[in-house]
Length: 247
Length: 312
Image (tube, rainbow over all chains, first blue to last red):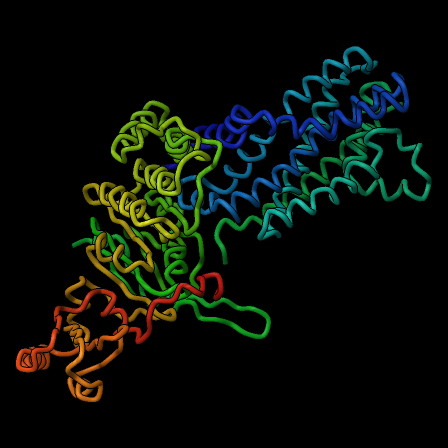
């Protein structure tokens, strides 16, 4: 039987996305804990004025968490369940598998993202085409995060190792970068470090689109361009690292 | 008879800093279509390495493997369209039911929803999984989990199934129920490539056997072919009446508890029987078992201490 990409993608989304969520809501709750904890924290500490940072940061962090989950799942499926080896010996191609896995992780993000979008309607002051800017930014961030998760997963032979790395990556990509606050709040010496993380550029775009921080067209194009470049570079690295067959 | 698998001088070398290990050396093998081949050998003999090369998940260092006339290196896509694998120590998703496992595996392979549903129903029924079809894997016994995995590949349209130690860790009853499932999977013209270190499993399931030791193929063929290749095709066990020294002139002697065991030839076996009758000594005699053949060829007992990964 030849590969049927749509059927393969649908099957993988179902078995890695819908079915686990249906059987155990904990899968869903787990992905919501971090962004909603930050939201709560900001609300308590900063008051309602800071809620919007929690909403914009929540969108970015929820998208970023797709990469972390993907990294854990891919390591688990390869090292523990040997599922990847089963898939290799089928008509399914490596690109289809990775894309389907990345899409399946989106399933967990949808409920959280829906809540943030609804909240944003109440608290954000969207600029013209703000929704388009946010959507484009989050798509690029999703590609970046998925490619990063895939690349990191290739390094681990054990799922525990993989889980240990996830919080470190998370600090570098979501705590130091100004995901939950404007970059001006960071000490000057930390700002260059923050700009290394693509999440900084995504957060700037989302915050700008929601009218939290000023965003001019040239700035938006620059931020978007850098985010696009980061996504392409990570995608190429992931493609190179893809070892469908052990050499 | 057309061949499902042809391997020619397959080598696989694992390299690491300062050294290497040859997991396979010049392995040549043929598996006719529609047969079950049992690849036997101790842990670390190279069984999984060979299976992974043949099933396109590992590249050989040199040599050639063709599955259904397609080269596994240069025509991997064509091979993958016609094979299915249960890797060693593979486990099903614990949140899924056997029915879902089979259905989504088939859909992932490209079957339409209707075909996948019909084939799932058939496979579940054929393997006697109806009572558990909607029970999540987490609540199933080890044997049922394995049967669910066999159902996945069995329901597929694959012409060649690769099963890597499908019953390791299962109790005897569960093992036999998986054997039954594997036998049912041998549909018309479907080939099964099975690796195992359980000789009773290989003997019970396989039409042909291949014996790997230290990455070398020691022998292959039917059980009778293998028996014909050992120098001493009879096994004699005596309880007293003969000294070890006396028996050594008849063949290869070993001690099994209080008894002496001897591998010997036909004429020697006759002579010993005659002497045992004269002495009034209890003696049992018969053709060698597959385990005896293995012992004679390998010269050691099967060990479960090492694993294939120890050499990888």
